[in-house]
Image (cartoon, rainbow over all chains, first blue to last red; front, top):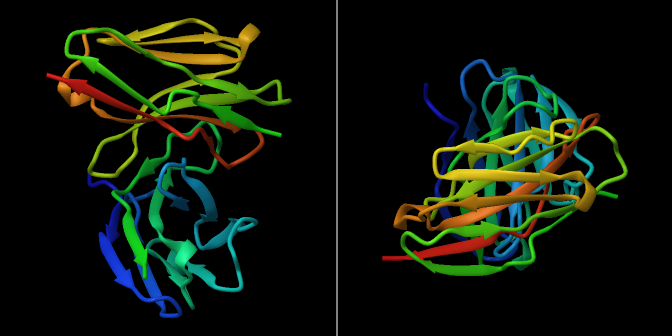
Length: 115
Length: 114
């Protein structure tokens, strides 16, 4: 079974530029998550999708971050404009359902550096 | 409020030594789930174990074992006879039964020296 795919793996941009990350979850997984992991910290949930609807985006900085999951499969996370403090690893995860007892499978992440 | 504390930031052991990673959590919920994930240098988080709050049985899986004690709100992880491949950052996490958000600890970086 293929795992969660993410691209790009690395991205370096200057502040105020825009950037987009892509995630392809495990086939058949209805729930998709985006996390932000700042160096030395645990991952923090940014947004959760159930199929193509948003379940929780309470910690997404909506003035600069946006995410979509068209057709309930792939998802993109965008930052516009980027700030220095956005430097982090952005992890995508998926699970078969959104229940808390379900294991979330994580992708390799995209490491973003904002200069 | 939910909180997970991993007080050990970095641990180094010599290969074949046993090592215990500590995890202490806070929650007001009576039903919750605790997890351990491993994050190797490649970056992805690898699931190790899930435990629900009503199951305090300790679990052993090969060289890995977990000690869950509700009385002390701890969910510690022990690696027996450590190997170089165990070198990684290990995260303890909590999720409420009614929620969807993982509360991760800050992680413990384990280095196993050959």
